[in-house]
Image 1 (cartoon, rainbow, N blue to C red):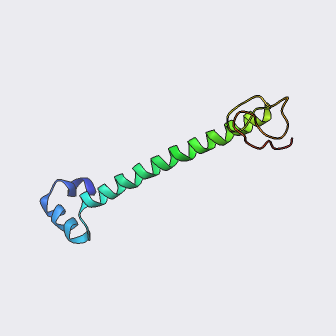
Image 2 (image 1 turned 135 degrees about the vertical axis):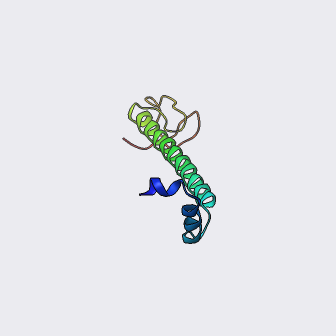
Image 3 (image 1 turned 90 degrees about the vertical axis):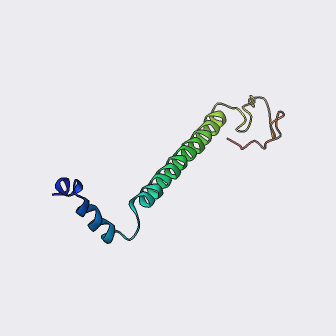
Length: 87
């Protein structure tokens, strides 16, 4: 049904009357939406990777901020001053 309508100028005129805004504007907003959604996904993935790195560092006895070896240190990290969470 739509394939036959797309080739005729009358169909375009009907669509122009039905749609309240022009198609390029809608496509522009859709493109902007998906670009922002992509950046949000990248930002969330990076935040998750940073959190996972902090967890792994703490598990292996390293400072969560700088990665300094804390196995023989008590209280604070001598490299960056970050407080050490008790295990």
